[in-house]
Picture 1: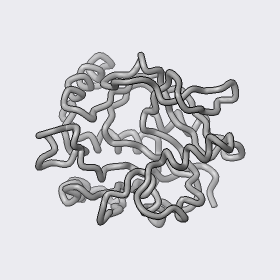
Picture 2: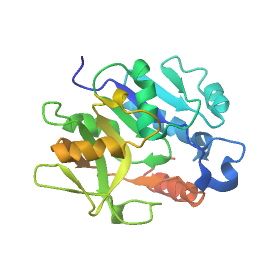
Picture 3: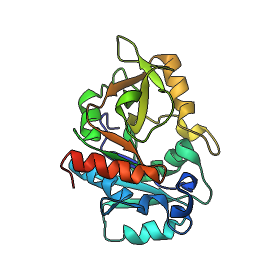
Picture 4: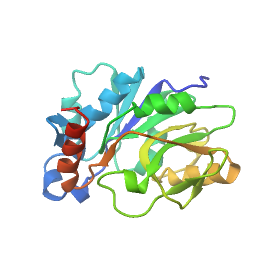
Length: 230
């Protein structure tokens, strides 16, 4: 079994209901930002980090995403007959991802600065970690409303509550996930890892914009333009 991740799970199965009319006939991962579909922004991060295997889960209007990715021989598709949420989606994709730790990446955000997957790889310590989440202070992210999700202790371990927002990128060792039935969130795994002291976090120092709502598109494009990425 490998100890360092060489596969990434890209979450793309959801209904995208917060996008309103924009996702009535198009899945959210195909919504364009700065002339490129959201899923292509995510795949560019995986390519830039040299991640060999990429798995995309599909459900809502999945045929459109499958057609969009048809030219990508390095992308495998994990079809879900029903929405399994992030934990169930990861479990279903394990045969394609292979054993050992994997990256997971949400496809509804845009990034600037250091590649988030490369950043996570630099901090991964499989001897002491079962999860490593990428975080940023709530007042330094764009398009996100609400409080933070986590705090970090002096050992880099995460606890619930605090000023840091989870940015939808992590390395996780999913050992045992196959024993959890049905649809469930990755929060269920994190809670067990937090209790065991094996859930860690690190900071992203670049920009990050949530594109889960229509107004996030313009915010993300402005962030990319300011960073000279468009």
